[in-house]
Image (cartoon, rainbow, N blue to C red; front, top):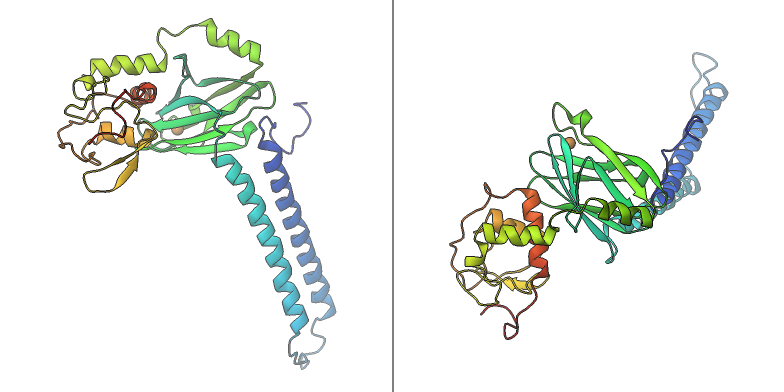
Length: 319
Ligand SMILES: [Cu+2]
């Protein structure tokens, strides 16, 4: 391979085949339609050409059968494409629950990636064959887009929020990673490689250069360094701020009576804009950490908060 002409880029994820089939169908359909329309048009140009200056066409009343046919057939074809595409899309946006996360921070002009065990990489991503992998992304500056053509997957990285995508690699190899959203002068240089390794090679890689702290441990250190624990004690006691034990994934009631689920986005917002959604029963006194913490550190703190188990006698939140 490689030298021969390739109609598609290499296919290395569980989506690739599905997307290629849909894409091929669309290309084939539009080719057949275009050729058919051009052929009929040329034929009619000749057959119905005007033969004398005073020749006038016959009045035609219309034909109900023709009109129904040329409405219903395209409708069915278009709805088929819609359901086909939606079906693939739904599979792509919902990561399976067993997906292993990789945290990605995009910035001008590089990709910073970190695995839960703390191992980090720049412009390179190592993943094991056959494992559902979920990429959770944030941007330090402008809009970027994480694009791996061989996986047929692409997702914008948007400043101020988290986006994610997932894939299951199906073929060992090294594949291009691109930024697919123009992000400034060196946008074209913002690319890298995804290495799909066998399980054994991946385990060796992961342990080859042991990070001195996992993401959770880094999060715990930051939690203490930034004195988060003075208001959010990990003992389960309610202090100036709500206890964070066991809150991840739960819903909490806010001052304004609405409820919000404690997820990555809410924790991130509460660190950067603490007054946006204050938990009921607490005063809006937390300062912003927008200048102290970067996106990668927020991801580490979230990894730590996820590990905080509910404390006995603290059942049911904070009231
Ligand atoms: Cu970029």
